[in-house]
Length: 189
Image 1: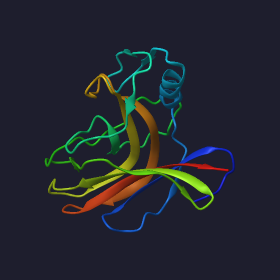
Image 2: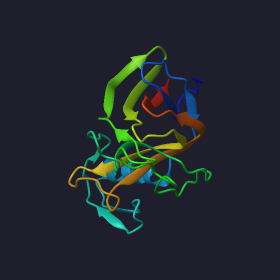
Image 3: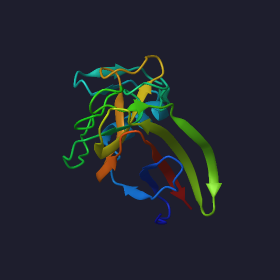
Image 4: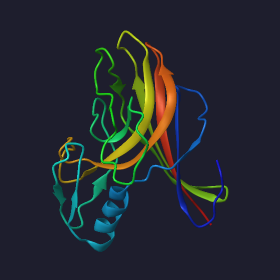
């Protein structure tokens, strides 16, 4: 990973379960990432555009959550098959891969966190989530992202907020295997 002083950076990986992550710089922080931070910092209500596209009001000071339980594809790290370039105004993955074991679907595991820690000259916050392909065929993952939900709601496509989205290139997720999606948010002094 690259070292840039005084900045918030993110890195992503999507590797076979148990493999060491190959890090890619994330260029995908979107508008809603800073809007959610603004709302929580200043205690103001905001309006977001969730996946559904219908404006949703988040109440002033409500905590935003990045966790996701097993089987949940509306929050936490998600993957998709879309190839449209990232944009500041993105509110969803282009083609999100939904939860399930049917054709073109993945099983979404529970999102885990590594506590914020000083790692060498950096401070890292790590999010990981396993994805299992039991669809009967290979799936080509082309995008990865992470959704937040307002703590007062169970996230849905009508209430979630996209925090970041990155193109992965064509990563073939072979049937019968598990891959781990991971984001690391990093600051460096």
